[in-house]
Figure 1 (cartoon, rainbow, N blue to C red):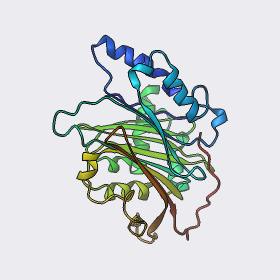
Figure 2 (figure 1 turned 30 degrees about the vertical axis):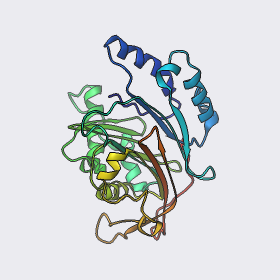
Figure 3 (figure 1 turned 60 degrees about the vertical axis):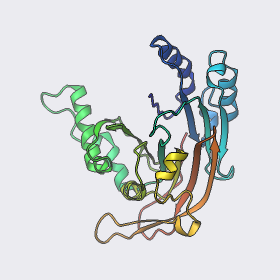
Figure 4 (figure 1 turned 45 degrees about the vertical axis):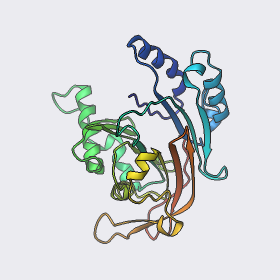
Length: 302
């Protein structure tokens, strides 16, 4: 399995043909491909073939080295007037063994998060190169210091971490726990702060994990997506993406004494079943009220 998650103007789809060719050299056949992203705030800043979802589909369907291999379809979930989710799935999986039909991937994309937390992801907030350290050792130390200071290590207990702090600011993290992965990308700049958390960990209930992630970042709003096989959905007990609006409200306990509980209301939700048994769901949540003194401003993500 290969998972690639990028940000900025990376031309992600252009690596797909190469990956397929490298797999072929190892006698590996393509089994499943899933490509998904939220709508861009600044699509004009993107490079070909990511100018639009239509352009991305045309690239995948028109590429002579990809078309026959993929034979997939594209889908749009959510309101065009609000945050929405684009998904492309090509599924040639032959599920002949128990446990192969219960996969799931949860993604939480958070916007305009706690400014105090955002400060932790500025490189110059930490002791720079210590005596005897190489540049690489200093980056690694600061990366783990940011991980600990923000409480990210507590979101994936027991996992093997590979974090990376960036100059002047920013952070990414990959972690592995047995057959599960976790990945995070954080942009802390005021006015456009953004954090994402993704995992394929198989849990009966994601309530505690969702609460812990949202409580850590305390965003003004977030988008949550779930891609799961039907078997995976049947294993889940409670799902805020399919619960009624009344029961989809997410109440996050305070991080410390004196802080208020955060309550997020689901503003919309969408779901679709693709390629026979792959269920794609997405929903938008917004903070019900904000009595804090934090300064929230506009946001942008490309």
